[in-house]
Structure formats: structure tokens, C-alpha cells
Length: 542
Image (tube, rainbow, N blue to C red; front, side, top):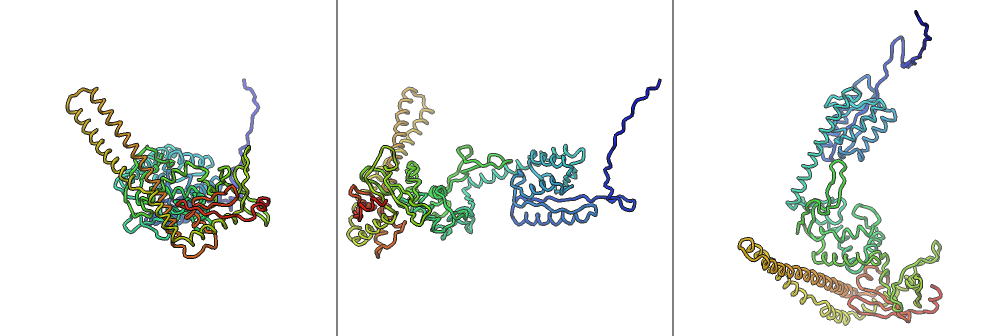
């Protein structure tokens, strides 16, 4: 028995564009083809390879009548382990996904990516849009049924190759570190350049800026104030920027390479795939190379600066001082510092004034009046010119004061004695341990004696540290006074304009007296009182 069933018709739409048919013949649509070329370094040999690849693929694609040449996408001097920094690669993928490319040709899997994840992710994304990649060396088409399996294998091999290369590079670098070979990013390092023998050499022009930074800091100028001064002077930063920051100044002041030494492997690469770098906190060895190159800053001066930096880091108020009078103007009435304010902002009457900090604190008040910057500058000029006029007698008095107050000989002798005792205790402990290992003895008695020697050893080490810090402090104070003396001796004419560097090199601080006059305290303790005119009218004005 035959059952009649209703039939169903499904229309299959035409897939051939009628415009492609001419005179009864199908006109084949050209495949839009691009190529990708990459070299991983900027050296001359790699640049030649890069040019050759570009030329080869251009001619190769254009010679095929069925292909339409799009372009050769390129990346120069970038790594293949990650696609994030490869602008040419990213542009190519974007154009492909936008429908501008049908086929991408590249030399090999390793040229495309050494990272399996990046490689497969990109290929699959392209594959979803019907875009094929052809790897010439391996003869792999990604739209082929075997393509992805082969790509996975080849990418894994390429990734392992990258890991091996990375380990070899790391080994080579650490071998160079052990040999004391110093390498710097000279384009970003102020004051040093690559010398003829491959070692760092002094760039005399830039070294003057480095010395100025160290000098200003030693004279009491805060890192932020130094940064502001250098910016105003139009001096470019180590990276060529116009604006300096306090952190850049601190980095320069704390970099041991300026005293001719070098700490190697301060950072290390965490992963060869991501190239993530991390500060070395003991995960891998570091190497300290003493006298690795010529010093810009005298080692003793550098060590003094490190002591001063430690103090400044503990005093955030001073650390952020931006203007010459910041943290330099004290109030004798309440003990607070004067802080700056700007009056009449955005008008022709705008000016910076300095007021006692007590005025801005709840529950506090102070009778001290305010001063504008020009009044403070005038007070300094008056005081420094008085010092210059009487410098012949004054210099002698201050020199005698410094010789007595900052004498370092007793501490130097004490330090030398402590260092001798440390060596003696170390050798005693070493012999004591060796004797105990070789000759049977009462272990309780051994432990008591060992603990006694070890405790003394630690106590002497701690005392040496304290004496060393005190000695450094005295040397820093004496250095300031000696620089003040040299500055005054060289000042042959009266000062007519405020100069920030002269201010930092001569003055410790200024103090507003209870009578609202100003005491200018110079380095070495010499003080000049400057009467301030129109006190009462100025009190109303500020």
C-alpha cells in the first residue's frame, strides 16, 4: 500500500556572483594576499634579512596572476615570544579581520610566533573568518584539515626553542656579571657613555649636570626643588624629557655607578614568554663590581649623600620641599615652619606669600606676620652681602669653628680600632670552631665560650656601624661648611639678585623673631639679623 506523503522543497541560494560570468566563462576572483616578515634585533645582519624578506614576498605575490598583492607587514627589532609589542603583526590581523586579506604568507612558524598560545589563538581567530595562513618553510596551510594539529606541534617546538635561547642568553649575561663586565642603557643614563674599550666612560658635558645635582643636594636642596630648578633651566632629563621629577633625582643620587662601582643584576626576567621584569630581592645572585669604571662623584662624597638620603627619606616634609624657602623658614614664636600660599590667583596681583603653619592648624594661633617672597629674598641679599663685606675675618672664625666642632680624627681612630677587633674576633671564632671539630671537648663549655665570642663580635659590629654613621654625619657637616667658606671667598662683588644655588650653598635656615625681624643662619652657625621695615602695615597687607 502506497502512502502519499507531502513533499518539501528547500531552495539552495546561488553562491556564484553572476557578475563574475563573462562570455560563458567563470571569471575567477583573485585572492588577496599579504605577507608577514619579522626580525628580532636591529643589527646590520638582521636588517639585511628584513629587507630581503620584504623584497622576496613582494615579488613572490605579484608574480602570481591569481593573487592580488595587499602589502608586506613587518616588525623590526621586536621579540617573537609575545605579540603585544608587534605593531605590524597587529595591523595585519586587524586588516584581515576587516575583510581586506584572504591569505597570509610567512616564512615559518617561529617567525609568526614562538608562543603556542598566541600562535593558536591568532590562527583560530583568522580561521573563523575564512582567512588562511601559509607557513612556507613547513609547507603548512592552516585551512587544511591537518593544519591545526601540525601548527600545535610546530609552535610547541618553536616555544621550546625560545625557552632554550632565553636560558642561553641568561647564562651569557650572568657569566658576564661574574666576570665584572658592566653594560648600561647609555641612552637613558646621564653622565656615562660607552668607551672605546667597551667599558663606561665619562660624558663630560652630562657629568656637569650630575655633579650639580649631588652638590645641590649636599647643600640642603630637596630632590623636588632640584627637579624644579633643572626644569626651569631647560636641562633635559636622562630620557630627553623637559620636566624633571623628584624620583629621577633620587635615582641619580642613589646610583652607585656614579662613584665608579656597579651592582649587576638589580632586576631579572621572570618569564621568557611575557618578558616581565622584577626587582631582584634575593631570588637570583647579584654582583658588586668595585672600581669598574672612572667615577664622576668622589666615593666619599657619594657615601655622605647616601647617609643624607636616609635622613631625608625619614623626613617627608623636607623631602617634598619645592621652593628655596620651603622647610628653611622657622617661627621663633611657636616653633612651626612657614608654608607658602598664592594670593590673588589668576589676576595681575598674584603673588606667593609665606605664613606660619600655625595659622592653618586647628586650635593653634601665632602672632607671626606673613612675608612675600621678595621680602625674604631681600633679607637674604642683605645678610649675604654683610658676610661678603667682612669675609676676611669671618672665614677665619668659621674655619676654626669647623676644625673644632667637626673634628673627625678621634672617630677615625676609634673606627680603625673596632675594625681590627672585628678581624681578631672573626679569626678567633673560626679557629675555635675548627678546634672543636678536630679535638674532643666539653660541648657545654664550648657553647658558653662560643656564645661569649659571638656576642662580642655582634656588639663590636653594631658599634662600628654607629661610629661609621656618626663619622659620615660629621664629614657631611664639615663638607657643607667648607663649601660655604669657598663660596664666600670666591664672592668678590656684592650680590644684587637672588640666586637659588648661592642660597643653598650658604644658608642653613632663616628664623622669624618674636619682633618680626629675620635671623639668617649661615652654615657654620654665623647669624645675621635683618630688621624688617613697615612691620605693622605689612601685617595688615598679608
